[in-house]
Image (cartoon, rainbow, N blue to C red; front, top):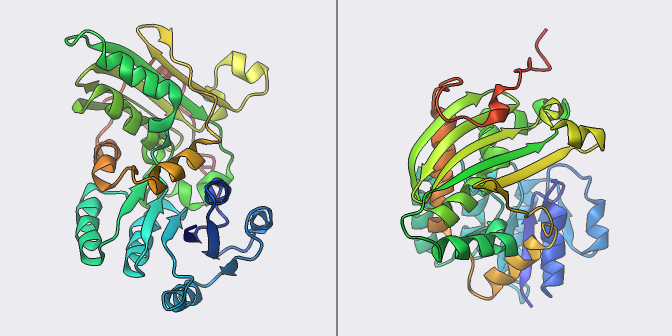
Length: 321
């Protein structure tokens, strides 16, 4: 049994980490979040110590280092811009670290973290759960076993509706979240480069507060992609059913279905790490470099190979008069 501490216990994704810790037969000893809406902990680890001040959490974890309950892993579910600092904290207290995506916001942060890993003799692991999805694993094997010179045509769309709260939260601040492509798209970019190889060409057509669209040429694929948090961009068929999310990956016109099975992927990711097979800093680099580049590129507009959804009418920011 391993001992865990959790940073970001009140966040959206934290319950999946709590469940993963429990389902893999381990214990949560301490948790931190500046917000105290963490009643979900009662369903998993009601006896875990909880802190709303990082300084007290830090002191508690340091004290545990000198007991039989030393923390083995620090799990991080905090806002994106805090990941780098919280990863360093975990390494400094002598723990391995499991961090939500995006691991960090900038590629040079990864290079710096490699040095901190060496200093403390501990590892950093990123949750890249799509690499463990059976449909994506099957797709990767299909590409590997297919014609060596084949370049596949891919369309990717991910639309997940968010309300006005999004723009008040840290998620609506590009300096903190990294923007749309980083916040909701990074795991898709990781999956694409894992399956189809490294980036050769990267173009951005549209990049606003609520959507982004672009084109990638990978080693084995040409990808038109579209991301959005605006419910108005959902297909009419999804709206008619009251749906709030649309996820589509087509290859050569064939739909690759991977909508199901997401809820258990965090548990699989934890077991993968505990078995000594986790995805480390180097595995995170391609997607972090890609979203960093997307964030800093000037959009081209509707020219060249763009995703059909990119033609949808743009929307005003909800806080604009």
